[in-house]
Image (cartoon, rainbow, N blue to C red):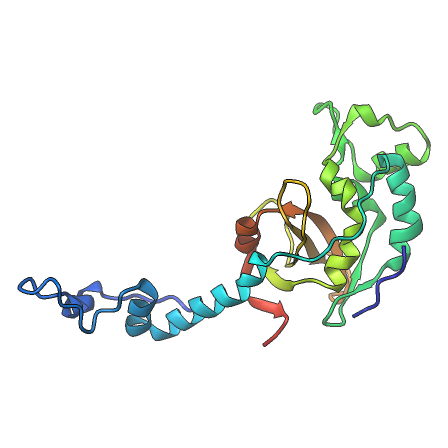
Length: 238
């Protein structure tokens, strides 16, 4: 693999004020001064809120795009994928995002990237233990569950971090992944399935505040990807 170049405030509104805009009962066909759609109505009543909502809908439109061509799929088994991960992916760390931020890749996050876990739910296993089993040839793949689309697209992560469609603050409390930022990229997919792949990053707990790592990455729908985001994009900045 060739290295990738770095590249509201709360408000209250008294709805009684809207009564002045009601149509006269004597002339139900009269529509002068009454906007025909909600956004126009909102722009009259709350112009700042309307502008913010319109701006957000504009920049989120990137998630409705046709998408980019994706990097090659990975069809190796889990053990061989780990070997490739160590040989070709880890040496790329840190990845450099479009803002010039360094994003680290951690070996112990390999199981999380695949959502790798024992089939026996009564036998939980730490990430480093699963990696050790793979490295010592005691790993039996049929005894574990994982997301195949995550394995096949694992090596797309550098493309998403270095060349995202957008970067956002992750909405707190939404989803199961605890992260601070989310990178999103839409891909043209020939097979069925969600076209958006997201990468979650977080600052290392207890480490230097400037140290960021990739926490997790997976496919999601366009609508769910929008729900992960909060505010305007951190990149690109207009």
